[in-house]
Image (cartoon, rainbow, N blue to C red; front, side, top):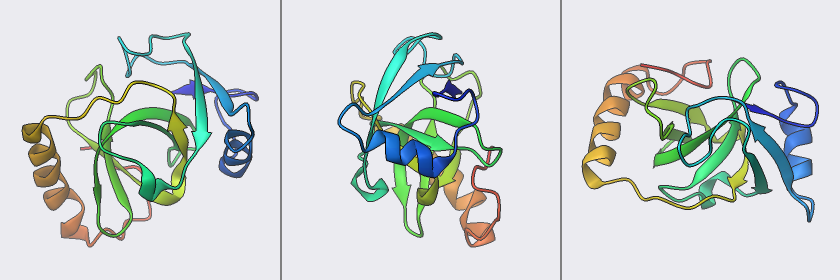
Length: 144
């Protein structure tokens, strides 16, 4: 979870507008899911980006179904507008998925490509989780 200018809940449109400014959107990491790359309390700059331009291994900011902002690393983009992601810390094993519409921007952090085996696991997870439901669930973020 991250904290933006107005606390843990930040409107997606406002966040995108701030990320599109020359200074970008500055958020403070409030959780441990991205440790050790971004420990709790770290300030991260997020820049606006079209979700389709995100690449595997990049860290992006997105809104959860509950309205909180999260930073996670992209594992793989799936057809139909789904992004499979996970935190670096692996507090929760497995993957999660969010819709491209919930992406705010790309975090200015080092890109770390996922190993092929991790991408394969994500595809197997998505096949069982997303495609069984034809990716039509109303919830934007799904957890295993």
